[in-house]
Length: 175
Image (spheres, helix red, strand yellow):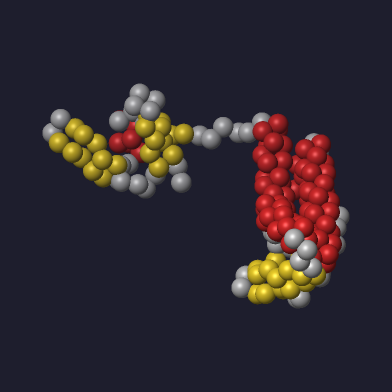
């Protein structure tokens, strides 16, 4: 699909779309021909050929976007508890830790929490062990993501960037 630009009016036109113009004789609406566009001051816009540096940066940006999506997916951000897959982000982990520590400080040895409508009851010491393990997993997974980010940014060959695989994440936790 061709694009056209009018340098006088700074308007864009995409081939095949209807255009409405205000003329002295009134409003005029049509799907213009190339000749009409030229007569009205439009020029076909030719996308500039990207430089090798721009292509390299685009490849890095695309791969980093893939990495970000992967990092937020269940492939990384998940664990299982009683065969149910879930994830607690940093804020929820901290809220849960504060809650469990309050139970412990109050002398309560067992706590019940609900996730997605499912009840989980464990001794507070088990809750804290699970939270510690989850916090270590999240930190190590973040380290892996950041190491991938650095490795991608260090690459200077588009094929190497496109074929770069995300790996070495720590094993997911199962409680």
